[in-house]
Image (cartoon, rainbow, N blue to C red; front, side, top):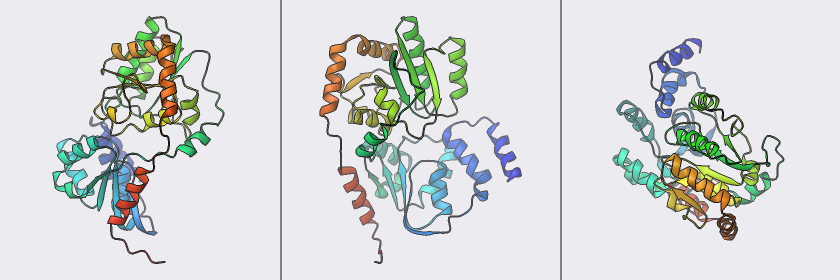
Amino acid sequence: MLISRLRFSIKLRAGKTTDPAVAQIFWETLGHCVERNPKKYHVAIAYSQGVPTFYVNEKVFAAKKIAWVNANLEFDSDNTVFQRKHYASYDKIVTVSEFTRDHTRRIFPEFRYKIATIYDLIDYKNIVRMAEEKISDFSSEKFTILTVARLVEFPKGFRITLETCKLLKEKGLNFHWYVIGDGTYRCEMEKFIAEHHLENYLTLLGRKINPYPYFKKADLYVQTSYSEGFGLSIAEARMLNTPVVTTKYDSVNIQIFDGENGLVTSIDPECVAKAIEKLMNDRTLYSRIVSNLKKEQKENTEPITKFDKEIGSLGLEVAG
C-alpha cells in the first residue's frame, strides 16, 4: 500500500490533473489494493464515472452490470483506451440526458447498442423531509446565493463563479454566496477569495451530507457550468422552489425556461452578475418565478418506470 501510494503521488506530480486522468492513475496504482466485494448480486450499478466504474467492473460479482453516466465525458487518447476497456464490460450504459447520450456515443460509437437514457431520479418527499434539518452556518441577513457542485474549473465553471462574485461586490450589492462541495480547484478559489477580499461575500462550506436545508434557505441557486449531463443540483433547487440563475450549457433547456422558472445567461461573469442583480432588484419577476416553481409537478415517476424497464431488459432470472 505504501509503495502504491508513493507511485500514485509521483504520477500525480507529472501534471495530469483532470478528474478522469486522476481516476485512472489512482486505479492503475492503487486498484490492486482494493478488496473484492465477496457478495454476489443480480445487478450492480456504478452510479458515477471514474473509480466507481472501475470498482464495479473489477471488484463486484454480479450477473449484470450497469454504468451510470451523469456528465459529458472528456478523455485524452490514453484515458479513452483505459475507459473503453471498462465500459466494454458493462451490459448497459445509462446516460441522464439525450445530450449526454449523444456525447457518449461519439466517444464510444461501438457501444451505441447498449446506451439508454434515464433522467436523474429525484426523491421529492425525502428531499422535503431532509430540508427541515436546522443549520447554523448559513446567514439570512443578506441575499443568499447557493451553488452545489464539485470544485473544478471544467465543467463546473468556478472561475466564472469567482469573477461573478467579485463583480457583485464591486457593484456594492448586499449578498453572501455559499458553495457546497470540494475538489481540486479549492486551493485556487481560496487564493482568489483572499486576493480580492471576498471573505465576507463568498464562503466555501465543503462537503455536506445533507445539502437540502441550504437549498431551502437560499434566496437564489446559481450554476455557472460549461456543461452538464442533466443538472441534478438545479433539479433539487426546483424541488424546493428556489429560483435559479444558470449559464446556457448544452442540456439546460431540459429544466430551465428563461424568465419562467429561472434565468438563463451566457457563459460569462458579467452576464451572470446581471442576471443575479436582476433577481435581487426585480421583486415582481422574483415572485413570479417562485410562483411558477410552486406549480411545477414535483414527483416524476417516469425515470423509475424507465429504470424498471431497463432492469427488465437485462433478462435476469431471479429465484423466489
